[in-house]
Length: 167
Image (cartoon, rainbow, N blue to C red):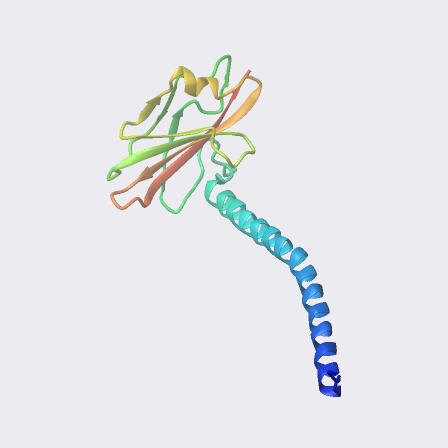
């Protein structure tokens, strides 16, 4: 004997419509969330790659001063290897002394690359390479090596740069 009133009919119709809306929104969430995550991950990866490139890129060699690059600090005259073509990878890097330095940072790159093959820190004015260091410099490539003199607070006091090739 229950009698369906217009209000009950309207409520049931509204509930059915609401269920349909919920189902359609659930479908939207299924693709929006993964797309958002992919966009977020790609954005973060691009930012990290950009910062890495900016920080790790060696400056180009200044023309007219083959062997080292000018910087805001003083220029360090690199001694060896400097513009040479070598039969084997070098066993040693050497440069002039810089007064007031805490340490030197030496980085070696394949010419044209912004990622160093290796980086070493020393307080001496030369760096003896290990067999492992030398193995990182394959024959048939040109290389750039860079020395940076750092002061007490880590600031760059001077820097120098040279190229060499391994036959």
